[in-house]
Amino acid sequence: MKKILALMLALIMVFAMVACASTDTASDSTAADTADTTKDTADTADTAKDTADAAASDEVKTYKVGVAIYQFDDNFMTLYRNELESYMKSLETDTVKYEITIVDGKNDMATQTEQINSFITQGVDLIICNLVQTSSADTIVNKVVDADIPLVLINREPLAYDADGKPLDEAYEGILNNAKVCYVGADARQSGTYQGEIVAALPDKGDANGDGVVSYVMIEGDPENIDAQYRTEFSIKALTDAGIKVECLDDQVGNWATDKGQQIAANALSAHGDKVDVIFCNNDGMALGAAAAITAAGRTVGKDIYLLGVDALEECQEMVKNGTMTGTVLNDHIGQSHKAVDVAIQALNGEAIENYYWVDYVKVDASYFG
Ligand code: GAL
Image (cartoon, rainbow, N blue to C red):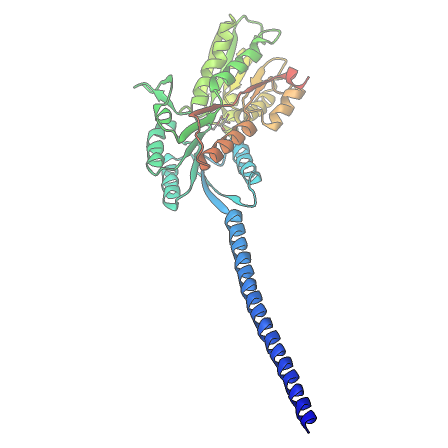
């Protein structure tokens, strides 16, 4: 009996030990689970933090850029604005985007001023402006500077003028006084000089009818535009500097437009006939019109008349190549628009910018094509 009791006791102890052990095991696993769960929670938090960190570094920054163009209906500025937009878009990254709004000033300063006001109200991060009137540069620059928005002026260089409206050949102070304002463009004097030099380099130095004087017709762009003023002045200066005698038969404003160029050239050709040696146009748009008038008048470029433009539009490069135009000057819309965008991005990044950025013109005559 004693043996049986001892056995039962032993059995009870074994059971108790087993039970105890299993409780331990249970409590151990609970602790482990809890620890695991805590660890999991910590892991989840880590993951969340990682995601947040990634989101922060991957956070997309969208800069709003307002672009005011003086007039959409302009051959050269159309090439320029399209290149400006596509180049800026090409510089977007996964984390930096540019929301570009381009507006048409319709060649009206009041319209453009309203557009600039609206960019300011919308809180754009940067403005690129092709002024309708450089005489309004002050108003625009002050407005934008007051709103603490960086400003990149393009295409129409604002100069200081004297009381009679003549350019003083000096930098416009409003730009130099502001760290966040600059002008990107080409020096119009160079383009005029190149036109004159192309003529001076011709075998007859531009004297197509051989009467000893280069008699010319000047077709001007918008007279308020320094490009028009300087091209008009410096094309002729290059001739007189080369010792060539000149005579102005007619000087009319064609406002950069092809139809006006055609009309002015047609009138001048019918008024002056064979006396006309050279037609200078401040841009290719007007030269295209003049070319049509020259053909209509039965004249032949390179034989009894010469024709010059500026911009080097593709169709005009073709014409220079095949001789239906004497020469043009490359107004580098790619170089200028890329420079404007590069500078804009520097300003958006808070980097210092200079006040002036110049892009060279390139002479385009028959020799340009080799
Ligand atoms: C000039 C260009 C012209 C016209 C003008 C507008 O540089 O030669 O064709 O686009 O700008 O301001």
